Structures are given as structure tokens and as C-alpha cells.
Image (tube, rainbow, N blue to C red; front, side, top):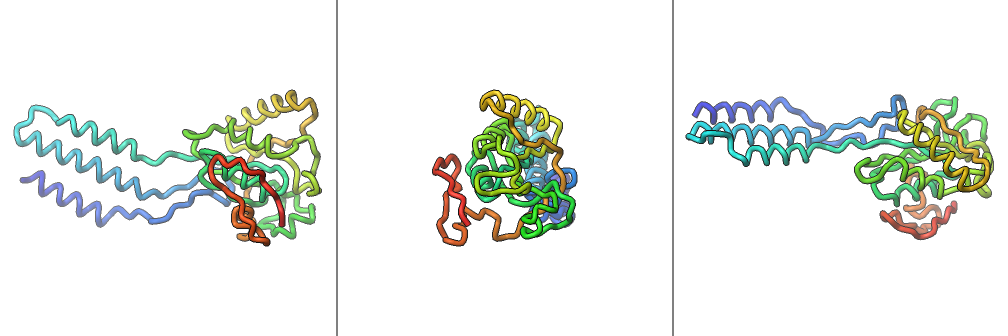
Length: 254
């Protein structure tokens, strides 16, 4: 009986004291440490699930069981599986960010993307500011991905295949330092992988690659109309699929 009263009291405390926001920040667009910030409702669910498992096992023990039931272990195991998976971030620049973003949207394991400006010296630049080529920024894509579904090395392959890294400060008809090729690492492991990948692709292409590899700095999100631009259809309304695994040619138009 006492255990039941404690259970009721504990549930009241959970209900009154645990406050879990209904929204979470999926991509840290402010740069800084490059770490993703999360506020997960599932954390409270895990706490409640484990509590009920403990309460059930306690009651069973009081009623004469010689040990905690096996069901308790399976419930705890399930609760552990419910724990949120930590996603990681990667930042790439490969010309006009519209088409680069769509390429990563289609990649398996990528959970979110955002286009924006990074590596410059002006705070909160506009698209017009960056287009002058005087702010030092590059058009880039911030990628959030699940490392259990896709590796950073696989994302690097998407990057290399999407553009011509042997071109300096341009991609096709888009000319200027804002269209330069770049990999901006968030961790030492990403730096190591990026440099090894560059050497591999330089050998494969047989030409000098002009891709810069630098630490990720503050990422300023571009204006809303730039986000998922090709998926939304651009000015002409010609939508392009962002379906995972889609291999349709990507057409970059204004």
C-alpha cells in the first residue's frame, strides 16, 4: 500500500515539476561551438517509463516474488532504445547553395538542411551584401545528419560529386569568391576525414583541387525564400523532388 502511495506521489511530482518544451532547435543556426541544441519531450517519457518499471517490480517483490521480474529488464531496455539519437552537423560550400542543398536533402540520413552565409567578416549579411564579394562570405549549406544512417565520409562523396572542385572561385556561370568550394569542419575527426578525402579526389581527378578546408565559423541563415528553394519550385514554380535517394538531374534556376 505504501508503495502505491509513493507511486501516486511520484507521478504528481513528475506532472508538476517536469516541464518539457514542445519544440526543439534542430539546427543551431547561430554557429559558435557548432553543437546542436535539443529539448526533447522523449526525455520525460523515458523517465516515466523507467519509473513504472521500477514501481511494477517493487509491487511484484512485495507480493512474494523472489526477484524482480524479467519484464523489468525488457522495459528498461526499451526505454534505452527510446532515448534520442544525437545528430551531427556538417557545413559545405560548392557554388550556388540552391542546388547544393537539394543534393544533401536527397541524401539518406540527412535530417535537416539550411542555406546561408559563413566564413565572412560582416555580421548578419544579406544576400545582396554577399553578392558584392566584399564581405568574405561563401554561400554554404548547413547539414544535420544521423551518424547511424550516414557517415561523414559519405556526405563528402555527395559534396565532391555535386560540383567541380578544380574551379577557383566559381562554379559554371556563377563567378565570385562567394561561390568558392569549401569544407568547414565542426570536429577534429571531420577535419581529418576532409583532408584525406581531398587527397583521394585530387588523385582521382588528376587535377589540383581548390577546395578550402577550414574550421566552421558563425553560420548566418539566408533569407527565407532561399531555404529549400528548388524543392519549392523557385520563381517559376517548377518543383524538384527532395525524396531520399532521388537521382533526377538537379536544375539550378532562378
